[in-house]
Length: 139
Length: 139
Image (cartoon, rainbow over all chains, first blue to last red; front, top):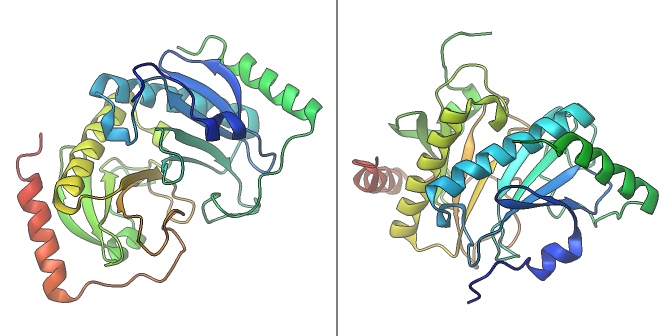
């Protein structure tokens, strides 16, 4: 097992790196169907949420909150879904997803609902820029 | 909006009360397909995880950890899924679910996969008792 953090290839493939927060690498999932963030705590060899030590768990809470608040300010969602699943990708990562009552999976969960719909390049750039703007002094 | 905590009727219908932890009411979902716990922070009028104040978020982390560890000791799952979704039931609740690579929804999420399969009475009683035993001095 590696002693240093490396982003899992599944997450590197599906996510766009937005920035590093104090603990987590923040990704935007490249799926235009939902404003969908993923927090990846930069600790090696963590699979489940309870594998993190308590201080790291609390830090993840703070990062979930700033991401949720940023999504709320930017998109005014009906609900924010937060989840650590990872049945397919065995590196701890936490989804923070803006949900809308007219989105394609509502009220069900987003996973497995439909194929990812990559952003058009200009929209991806705008979205990452908007997230940077919201999160540049997050903590 | 109510000023005191009351369990949402959906959760009262689908869950069996196991015990009150320091912050959350702990429910066992009455679905024999998965060892499936739900934590309901006993605060009124909370919908999203980030609606909790930071100290309550940290407390929820501690409670997720003790529930995950109890599930791990009792059932040796392949993965523990943790999620705050709540698109259907607008009271903040956190799922903590033991997952197995041969369970009916693996590797997908459990929600919406199949109708709930209520426990036979004797099995329900045994499971609640086992959880009590694991959690009686949790913190």
